[in-house]
Image (tube, rainbow over all chains, first blue to last red; front, side):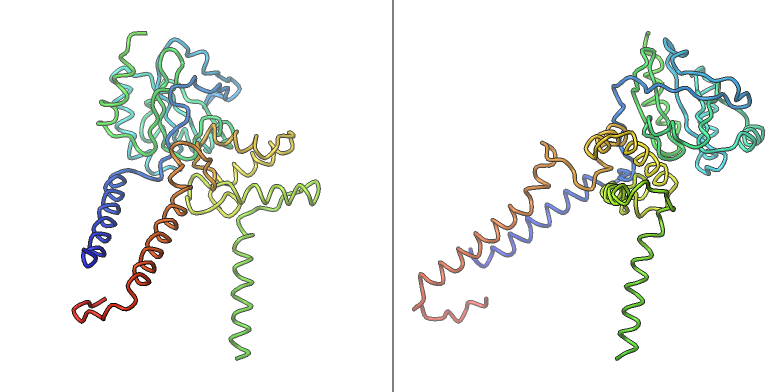
Length: 175
Length: 143
């Protein structure tokens, strides 16, 4: 028995490590889960891109479910997810753009080049307002339901699968 | 020998510079404020680059968070309130010392549990040896 003990200890340790690795494989550990899920969307009052003298508060959207997509012309992955955003917008989902740490000029040029899928774009030049949303990069995507509750957040480029499994069901809920 | 010592001094000096480089110069209102800010920034984890504090990181978001921390300090919030403010937005992830709660008790107690298990094993082995000191060495026993 005492001869077997080290072997047993080794096997136990191996199982522990294996389970640990399995639990974390395929998960993006760098993505921070949003503490906002299930809570009312933070207030937001930002200038509108292209017409910065006009500003918009998200409360004006209350009663409608929308997707908030954080992007910037400097962001390479935003270009990757751009076709997905475009298709989502064309299928009738209200997509609000959150232009993050960009210049108005660059943002407009980017939209001119790739197309503008956003129904509305707010501009956060220095990224201060973004802290309230827990935004720390781009692309990030939030889903806010008709009651103004944050329901979903995705960090990194969107894929058609994420749109179908996580975003569309929330958008289709009856108000 | 002297050369090695010199190299050592230089590398240590370099280490110090590396730590300070991420922080942009700030006009602190007092030495106390600077010390408090530096201590707080070193305890907060950068959300972009997981292995650095917001004091060490060059990431733009770390810069934003430093600015925010200083702003909150000047608003008169205490350290606990500032941490709470960041946790509300970025979860416990921003704390280098996670709080004690249900999901983290194993994390906190783990090392002590391991120590207890180890101590238990050592005591058992010693007791067994003491219980049979006169036993003839078993030649088949290899360890």
